[in-house]
Image 1: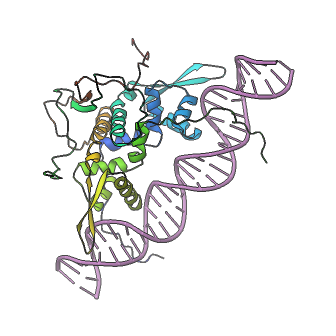
Image 2: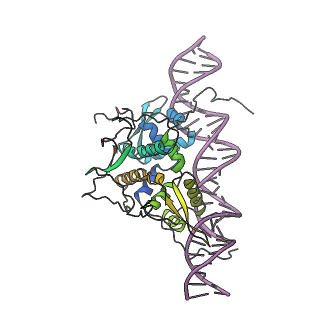
Image 3: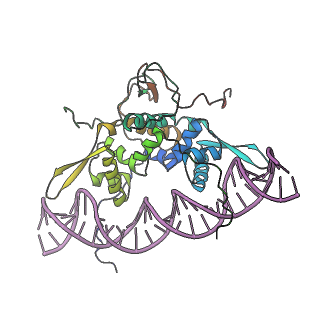
Length: 154
Length: 154
DNA sequence: CCAGTCAGTTTGTGAAACAAACCGACTACG
DNA sequence: CGTAGTCGGTTTGTTTCACAAACTGACTGG
């Protein structure tokens, strides 16, 4: 029986509608980004993606279908009898590269295991990456709206 | 009773050990990146993060603890009796900004809802971002090892 | 004293992940 | 021509997890 009904006129939950949350709805589930990593690395078939990600078969199938529905990848039949398929990045999918690169960079910098999949660009010793404005090339240190009094002087 | 034991000498699963997977182990679970978004936006208390992300309370607690354990954020007591806490990004946590920015950019470009949290940098009309080498500033279009015969001429 | 805030913990339930087996269409081997 | 193997899944059963809602304890304010 209903007793106190606490939590009544209090803390209303208004999840921020934002493009970050939107993106995560599309590619934020477990395995999705690893699937995309494989596609970026040139692995295009079910069995390869399965082996390299370690995802359970049924989950992998579900992810491939939902990424396809989201327009991030495309399923192409490369033979009939028996029907066999390859998965290819769409242009939209390819534009997720900065996210993968960001994760890779962070992992390299902050995790002490670095078997690192191939990185292309080499201009000498690895100097890492930066996110810059595509217009003026200036570094973009700004998601945060000047909210960093945080160790302003430590 | 054990019948066929198919799947025996076949497809061995060797998940790629890579920094992307490593990063995802730390920040890849549901809600984690939204928690970080809030910290970047200056929201530092449990109730605020709860309301703005929409995460269930117990899950939020778990995420905060594991992100703390991973060294991405720090839990600071800002009063005793009753003990109250604030969550702050560590330097390592702040270095996840490119990932958030990447997700935000992608969402803005490919999802047709854009209530967009504030972006700081404005050098005129929004020209988007680019990931570049921190050494020479040259664009980095390379996770993929030249694996794109893919619409090479479309 | 009662209401409310804050930062959680506890409890119960339903959905999802997971591992392992199975399947159908085919090829390759001997 | 029968057996084994590949490929891309689906099915089944179990366990884990997320989730919502209620509850708690220490406190403030009226």
